Image (cartoon, rainbow, N blue to C red; front, top):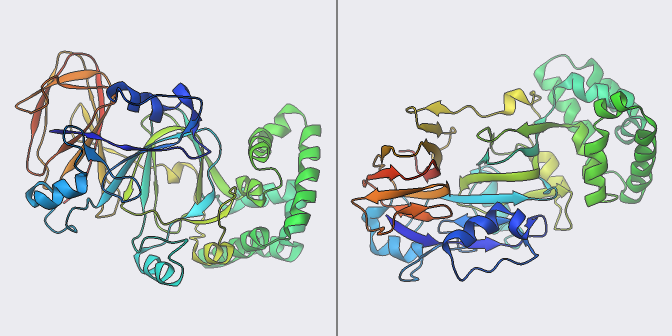
Length: 400
């Protein structure tokens, strides 16, 4: 095992100072890392050039180490590159309404607009909650969208009564998808100045409802997002997309073209090694509404259907393995005073210790592993751990 130092991204939506899991974990093992009252949003663990990890002892980049030691990585991967990017996210306010292109579309977008689409790779990703975690994910079932439209006059005004009626009468998957696309596209393309007027009217109406009606109409969520992004059309997306509330250990997998936005909480996230994002709301960054509305998967599923189910490898290890070749993640929870062997993989692994400490036997980690530690375990290497305290770690790898 080789200890790494990893890049911290201070995006505006991150949690502030010690409230951020990104900051607190980084500060546990990095004595040179000082925490101030700034947002700490993401911790990047991997070889992506926007945030490359380095070997702690030598300061050599992980990418250069893997180039010099190709046997430590997946033989079929690009020289010096992991197939995945592993992260911790600490979300204080909503991220943009977004989706990620599939591989073919990523190549096209990169060729046409490399400034806004810097990678030619797809970006499927998976979030596993560390704390209570909120997000929007995938289109709601048809009846839920219709119910919100019937109760919120401004939504019907935006999408038009004709499109609303099409959605009400749609009866099979294809017609439902087409009707949802028509309604959502109308929303995202609506006049920006008029949206501000309608948002104010919606806020006024929500404030007049009793507690039960406010809860049914997601008033608190709508008001919270509007306070973060006043006048932004993305506020209305809460009525189109599932409101996901994850408990620690629960996960959601964000396949290509699935609309989503993280709202609050801390999570670990793993994805293909890419930074491609198509945005259309809740952001001051570049918005590509036409591309987003054309590419989205308009399948309507429940929030429960958007939860990703893990498998049990053994009593200590839960495996989150989505249907992609780029990454999988193990969540490993070891009680105090237990031996446990991290088995070898045919790819390199990155290991993040979230809580606890352990001796790492037959390893070059002299003082063991502990909270905030990030380690490379080369391909075809195993390591035996003896937990001194209850230990929680996550392991990301290429699932070959």
